[in-house]
Image (tube, rainbow, N blue to C red; front, side):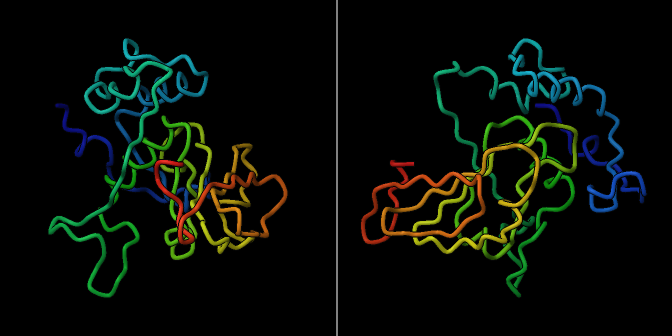
Length: 196
C-alpha cells in the first residue's frame, strides 16, 4: 500500500488568495495527479483504470464497484491512543491535518456525506470540500425528531448540491427553502438504519 502520510500534507502556508480555505493552503506535491482524479470524478468519467498511481491503493476500490452497488464509507477521526475526543470532550480535528486532508479527499470522490443530528448540532459542520480541489458532495442529516436548526451551516451553503434531511412522519422540521425532507418509518422515535 502506498504511504501518503508524508506526501499528502506538507507545511501550511498563509495565503490571502483563498479565504474560503480558512486562511491556509495545503502545499501538496501530489496536487497535479489529485486534480486529474478530482476532475474525472466531477465529470463523472472516473473509473478504476484511470486512477493515478499515487492514489490507486487508497481510492481504486471506490471505482471498482458496479454502478448499481451502494458503497458506504465510514470515517472516524481518532488520536494515536485510540480516543475520539480529548478528556475535555474536544473532538474537532483530533486526528490531525493529514486525517483532515484525507477526509476532504474522500468527500471529493463520494456522492454524499451523511451525519447524525448529534454531529450536526455539536459541530455545525459544512460537509463540503475545502482542503483539496474537488466537487462538493450532497449533504445528508439523519434527524428523527426535527431538531436541526434552519441556520445550520450545511443547509445554507450556496454551492448547488442537494441538502437532504432524513426524518420521521411525526417530525415537522422548519428548514430553509430547497432542503429536501425525506420522511422514513420510525419505531420509538428512531429511524432503522436499514430504512436509510
